[in-house]
Image (tube, rainbow, N blue to C red; front, side):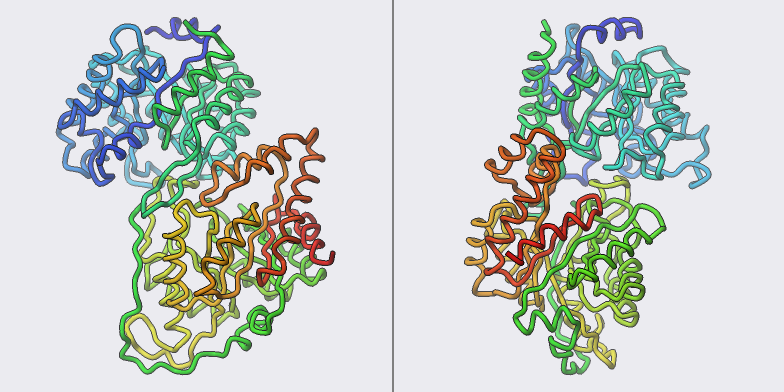
Length: 614
């Protein structure tokens, strides 16, 4: 296919790509420690079968199974010397299935290493690596190239130059962004779109990382900045962890609805990334046709070992913190969650915390890198809030970024500087956030971390040694009343309580009856439960929460209420009303509420808390 032919094809049509290859391979029992690209040689029948499924679902173009088939990534699996044949066979297999009627795109992803000046690999070395991959794909018979999931402009520039040095086939340049529309190092949408617009590519777009909700927002900006065709290939929402596996649960109907929205705002190339299947593509095919007729790291738990050190009496619950005292006294507690800023200026957060203190809110909840996005340290921000404002913080602390020794050091240091209230959670995997290539640690999950903090509260460290004065943390854990597998959620909660949990904060809940039913099921291990409340601000927000936030379900009746609103103001008011109704229904059955402050607007959270006075 020539570049002119692609341009002509996209003038009056939309090109539908396939979905995820990795997701389909994993569903066939191929685990993530395998080199998926090498399967072109060892399991060609499976690769052809998946390609065929996508074509039968209605895809116009299938991508080669070569996303990571560059010398640096293949070397890690011991297949560097097979680079040429892996890429050639990847293209040949796709070509064989696609025939002459469908298109084949050569998939090229990032090298997986840092380039100068942040790493030892030069720009020339990077270009040469891309060139040898692209040459083998071209020889195998691809019609065009998709440079996808790039997070760095310098890296994709070398990939573009490499392709252009060997051929003049069309290039789709696709970046991956966070929910703010920025690349991992903070490059904004305007900057990277401007660069790609000037470089020798035929289409510009986004794939992977975020689900369709945030991708649409970024694409709306891109559309104002370029006349080149735009591509959109989102994940099927955000993954949810079920039995240790990252599972994408966004429905095919939801993806199809966003495919319509993409097309209506000018997107010419649509498809799917992680989590999308032939079923998603089939439904998206119908959506496209209706508009334009056409022809985890494994996470494990650690039980507390028998300790050789002498345990000491722990700090009594009422003496741990003001929040702990209120819980011990049976008083209803209130808190508001404020997300840390993306930069280094804490003043807006501190001002919000002061407003909350002046309105007698008991604590400020500070999440720790929610959805694996890069933000100011939750630990340091919690200290600033307590020291400068005088309101207690509930510090969310995740297992994702630290090993056990680092966690223990943090716990000792945080206690020394005055942090007393903790919410211990496993944490979102990096694949969800700004740095999809970042390495997660996950030495333990939240159960193992709860065991560790409980031991520190009894004066014993990881090695069984006495630490002298014990810590006196109020230990909180997460709880999901709408979990996909409630039995597993209850089992884990039982372990958390056994490990030393003293209170729990739920995921945002929108169905009060489901929450109350769940509380009945855990009454045998009941500790104080603080219900998470999220004021919806728009229909898009409701759709996003329902489809792309792991562990959250918005009932159909509430979706219909948000859908019936006529304006942004109406939607916001309806969302606040729904949140207030939730508070009224549950306030006598839980020990407190945590209200999230959408967009950091604490006045919205205070409005919701006013329902407690009714």
